[in-house]
Length: 402
Ligand code: PMP
Image 1 (cartoon, rainbow, N blue to C red):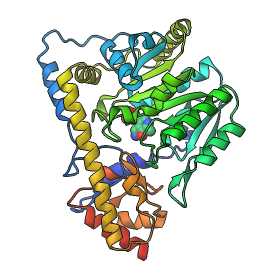
Image 2: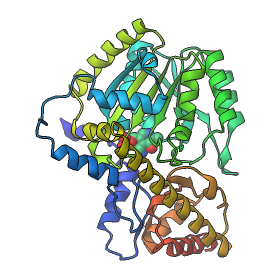
Image 3: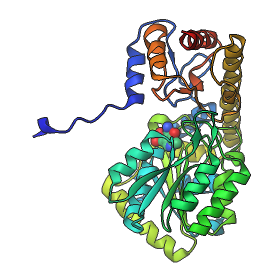
Image 4: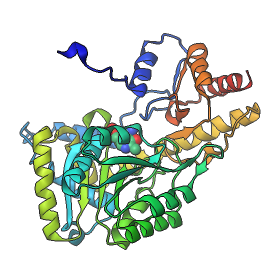
């Protein structure tokens, strides 16, 4: 029965992670995964998270019962406030449900839209987080997947004209537009505030449905409001119905806990009640209820003034480290006069940048230098440390001058 299954390609990112783990070379460097690493390239437990975990351990009333079907209530409320800067009045028209991290929020949102609105087309940036295409393909219900040209590969800048004109000329009423709230994955290039306003205007004029993916709030720049500016602009300054997939994986370092929330901004209470019912049914059939451990940690941090302050310090710590490694890498490449365009790495946002390195160079980096990056040439800055940055720059130099 299963021997005749079609071949499914292995996931490039997770295959690299395994190859890196199996590599015994002492100077190996992992620039592939989207996980934060500390000054010694090790996983980092945020001090705010550690403290919240300890407090939860001491809670003698805790049990292992199910969360409600919409998820851990304190998490949902804090999540709404965090991403939308929402008042109680605002939240009366938002249908929110806890999900299996950002991936689950993207997936449930796609399923919901497919059932609720039957859009003709979903517009995804080219390039994008690889799972956007995968998720919409999986949800497949006749919805066409199209891309808008986000990235100018030659100049390492956003193709804003291409983005706007594609949406203007080709998108039709009811179409979905996937937008990265901040720290665009994989390019690290974000729209300016004026450009966001222009995208919002197009969405309003053409009656499109924005679907924000917010996987890096606070982690990108260290500033919670700055990283949510795009979402908040659409929420407060337009009347668009929209979706937001919110992940707590990166900004809390809770990758394996799978904490996320999907928000559907409905604008009326009747619509909210209908959306809530549909989300509950879809989620019930997939997961029954969401996991509670990570949800409690996030809710604890966001609900406690001191812990929240500590968390903001933790976010600044991570974003400062990424910024300083960006500078160290660019300095080391410029010092060597390494061929290529490198300076954009200084201003890219979040953990990723495109290098422009070609597949054969990437292969050589892996085989000869034990440096791992995705075939697209995307690097994750968090794999860089003071100990390996010169080694990485030297290897980039060697493969580009070869
Ligand atoms: N969206 C984007 C743009 C991402 O980069 C990621 C993580 N790489 C996610 C969503 C989902 O992350 P998770 O499911 O781990 O929360």
